[in-house]
Length: 181
Image (cartoon, rainbow, N blue to C red; front, top):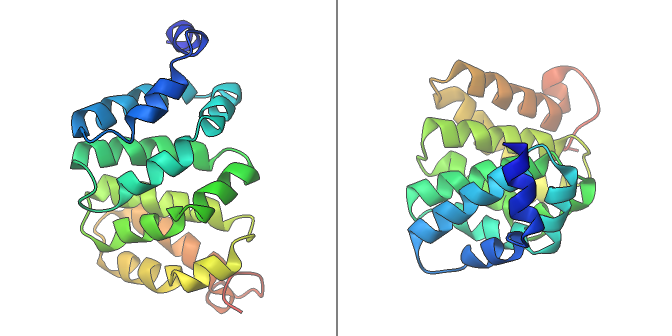
């Protein structure tokens, strides 16, 4: 509840929770990600505090296959999905620390269907400002999104991937705005 979230933040827990993300303990990472997700939920102020505490560069490595337990990876992705809705500066940080490549990796490596859906949703949100045009091309996002769209059984995830493709490949959507140039 909101009162508990405010109490956790007021007690100064965000910084120590971010530090736990680097611990060599998958259960610690999972619990820290869950607590951070809860703390930043629907609070721009709490998101800002978490970003200032270094949450973005602490979360992104957890998205890489084999870096931690699947449960901790899922919790890290949930937390990152909340942050991707944040400011353009936070989105830039996500991209600058390898978040784009990590999200693409989730689509390629056989993650759970829910994690893949979250990943493609994050990629779509990151594609909206088109500030990261070169990085999207370098990460071959369009090809990976097309492959994912063709192979997923998740209709909603497929729709999201198709929307991402329409944004990245203008001729596909009949427009001339997009990443592929």
